[in-house]
Length: 92
Picture 1 (cartoon, rainbow, N blue to C red):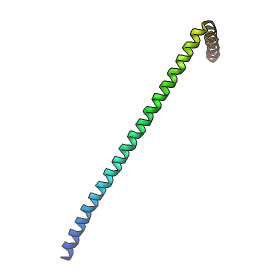
Picture 2 (picture 1 turned 30 degrees about the horizontal axis):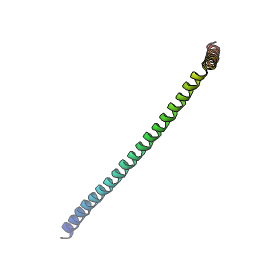
Picture 3 (picture 1 turned 90 degrees about the vertical axis):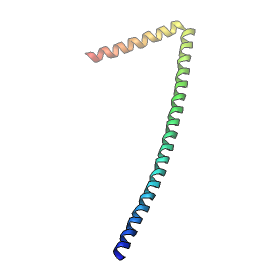
Picture 4 (picture 1 turned 180 degrees about the horizontal axis):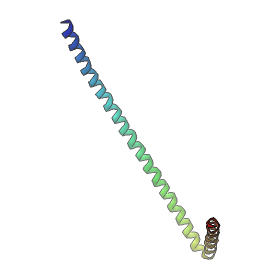
């Protein structure tokens, strides 16, 4: 019984350890899933806020262009000329 009892005891200990590791694994997996969905919700919320801000800025620019079309054209021309000079000097 010495050797057999020891082996049976070890086998039972290994079964308990497997069950405990399985429970720990389930808890960790559940926690990871919960944190992943929280992170996804935060990213989604931030993206929606960013989209709202960007749309508001575009609407403001469109309104200013409609209010002052001549000034908007002059600013666009100046920006285009500046970019043209920058890229032209880089080619040489």
